[in-house]
Length: 140
Image 1 (cartoon, rainbow, N blue to C red):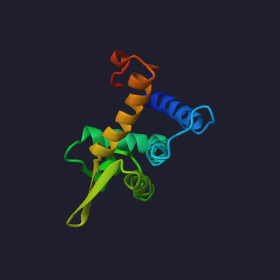
Image 2: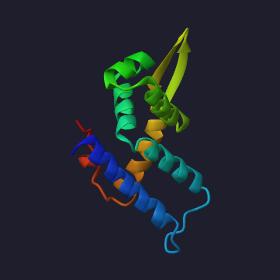
Image 3: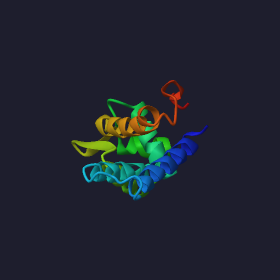
Image 4: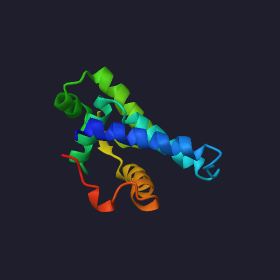
């Protein structure tokens, strides 16, 4: 299964969680609403191929990260387009940015990604056993 297909399946799954959480049969606790909304925004931010490629690239470069020029060269993406995607990912807590002189260094925000993965894992693998935990493996 390709990473894009995997992410689309995750989007479908999170949509089901959000929809059923708001139904009268499965009311969502008010305390859960902000977290679910935040995770939905994070998934939406990774919902385009360029952004998912950026996240994967920055995870591969973890913990050092990469400067904008390196990311642009690796992904063969125009700086203006890249800037738009980086802003969206940063705003949703998926990547961080640090100024180094005249350069901007981006890195995967592992704490944000860890929270997102923890939420998905809890929903699919522990709470309702939709997926057996031992079947959760890294995609290649």
